Amino acid sequence: PPNLVRSRTKSELPEPLTKDQATDFFKRTLRGSKWEVVKGFHTLRHSFASICAMKGTAQEIIDTWMGHQTQEMRERYRHLFPEESQKAAAIVFQDCGLFR
Image (cartoon, rainbow, N blue to C red; front, top):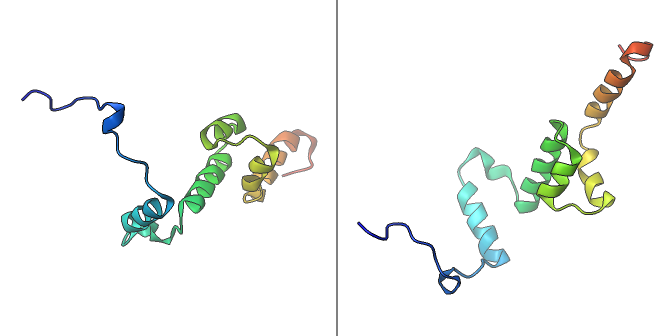
């Protein structure tokens, strides 16, 4: 059949969701799943950035994905994984016998 897939014109696009509508949709989507413990978009966003940092994603990439533009914004996520800093220090100084 023709026209199964077609592009929309700007006038046909739906209106953006309000904050309340988006929050309601988010909560309903997670209800009953193991992700129901996520309390909102910000928690999900914070967790995503933190996990990226923990897994070694380059800071510049995280900044691009998250829209971070200041050092203060970047620092919000680094404090969560102090053991990762210790591992990095151990790698850097492993040859001098300070870390084992």
